[in-house]
Amino acid sequence: QLPLVESGGGLVQPGGSLRLSCAVTGMLDRIKVIGWYRQAPGKQREKVALSTNGQAMTTTGRTWYADSVKGRFTISRDNIRNMVILQMNNLDTEDTGVYFCSEGDVWGQGTQVIVSS
Image (cartoon, rainbow, N blue to C red):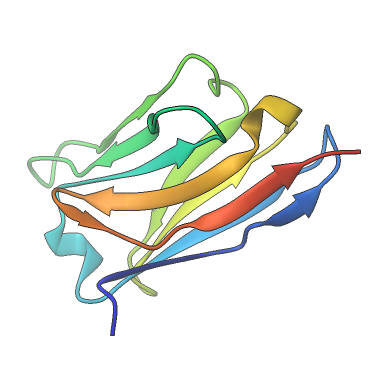
C-alpha cells in the first residue's frame, strides 16, 4: 500500500546497534539514488546516508554519509528482497529521532529510534 516502508526502529542503549530496513515497492535495482534521513525532536530533517547505483556494469555504486554518522552507520542494498538497509552501530543519544527512507519526492512514514539509558 505504501511505496516505501521503514522498519527496525526501537529503544536501544547508548553504544548499542540497530538495523533499519526500507522495503521498496517495486524493483530496487531501478532506483538510482535512495537515502536515509532522520528528524530529531525540535530539529529539521537531516540527510544521513545515500546510496547510488553504479552507472555501468564495470563501475561500483557510491555512498555518502553525514559527518555525524561516518564510521558508525552503513547503508546497503538488498536487491533480492528489494530493501535498503541502514546498519547503525555505536549509537549515541544524539541519534534519537524518526528515520525515513526517501527516493526523490517519495517518503516512507518513518520508524522511531530512541537511544537512551
